[in-house]
Structure formats: C-alpha cells, structure tokens
Image 1: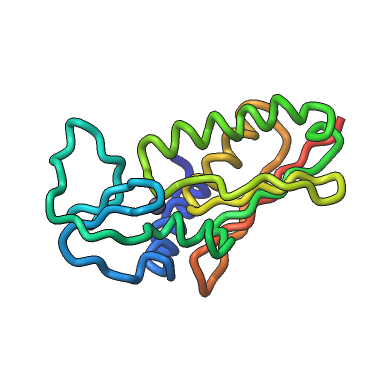
Image 2: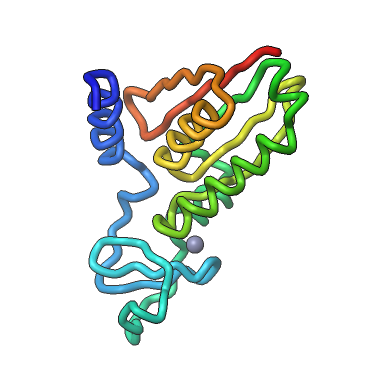
Length: 165
Ligand SMILES: [Zn+2]
C-alpha cells in the first residue's frame, strides 16, 4: 500500500465514526423489518444459518433501509465521458456485480439507485465503502480516472469517474 492509498484508508476509518445514520444505538439484538438484516454485537449482518438464531430481537429499520427511504446517499458516483455512454450495459453489469459481492459481506453497503443525468450516469450508495469499491472496480475494469472527494464534516464520499473514447 503506498502513501496515497494509506491516506485514503485513514480517511475511510476517520469518516466512518461520523455516520449520522449509525449514531442511533441499539441495545441487544435487532432485526430490520424491511430487509431482514440482523443487528448483533454492534454489527449488522445477514441472518445466515451459521449465525446464532436471534430470539429476543427487536424490530427496527436498519441504517441502509433508512438511507434508501430518505434518499440520503453516503456515496455518490458520477460516471461521465463518451466511453460510459457507449459501454453502458457493461458498466451497469460491473456496478451491479460489485454491489452483490460487497452487500453479501457488509449488509449495510447497497446501491440506492442508478439514474441518468444528461449524459452522465449517477450511482448512489448507502455506504462509502461500496462507493469506494465501485470507483476502484471501474478503474480496474475499464481504466479511465476516478477522483475521490470525502466530505469533511459529514459521512460521505463523492466520486467522479470519467473516460473518453
Ligand atoms: Zn434494512
């Protein structure tokens, strides 16, 4: 890991303490009534067979579902340049595949929506980790250039990926 990557990683951990959607503390265990994610020992996970069955779980709404309901993304990716118009299907496939992988491991990392804005494609996410991973996946698969801007005062990242031709 080089110096730049380390500083990006430090930022990720620093900003994560400020997530306004995670400030609400849940005592004991809880289950999200909307998506079924399970809160246990301070973490949100998917209730898999290998996990302990939660008997006394309170019903709540997880931070990811609240962000989706409020349309308050933590991550916003703007995909621009002529390449993203010509290869739209491949790009959407990569974005959806990356979400699937990330979401399986981290229950709160999800895509909120994909929207068109003029010639750009906008992808919004419930978590900054997924947004970050999408930026790197786009660069890894299609080259181009990703620019990451973390907000100073609140939990959020804005990523601009562009490739021409
Ligand atoms: Zn949920």
